[in-house]
Length: 189
Image (tube, rainbow, N blue to C red; front, top):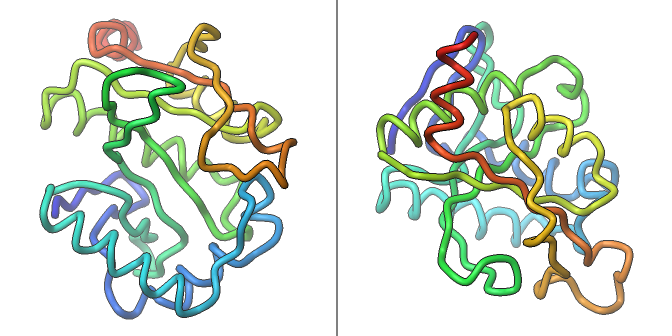
């Protein structure tokens, strides 16, 4: 698993000491507002174990986001391989995040996202990275825009993994960033 550092943050694989935080962010009603489920402690532990194994196998994935100053995990960010034919016929690499509520509004996701984009485009040689969110998730959409992603309305979709019992969470907006566009943005900065 890669270890990335930014000015204030460390992106690293999951450790057992992160279990409480992982459960917290996956069971908090406000953090999970745009998801149709909350995870029990057992479900959260099992998912964290899967993510850790995937990260070790691939070298990247949804990983712990830690504050450099304290060593405290505050959430997760990462690049994730996914396949949602309703959005795009070919598998893609998605950037995603989830933070404990008390860490919102400090620019941590944008900072970590910039580091992940550099890793994805330069380290992994990816031609494109995508991101998507429930159409009403203004916070996540704002981060996508800050990171330079462009909305592709032709790929907006009803998420097949969202049950029909949650129709307000089905519609997702799809954003993409190509390596060439990312390079132009950072060269112009």
